Image (tube, rainbow, N blue to C red; front, side, top):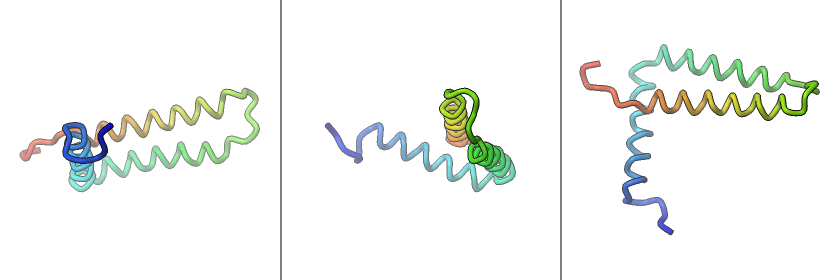
Length: 83
């Protein structure tokens, strides 16, 4: 089993992370909106006390993680130099 290094997957993930950082720096206002939405998820999750259904908590957590995944994928998109 390979470890983190110079393989194709590692290079791809490093490129994704770099694109995310550049996008955040270049588009701070939309990123701020993403942060505020995530903060709403966090606040709601902290206040989710004794839900009626046992599935409410896990499903809510999954929806927050799905949002974070979508935000990460959006930030990872490659931007042209002329954008």
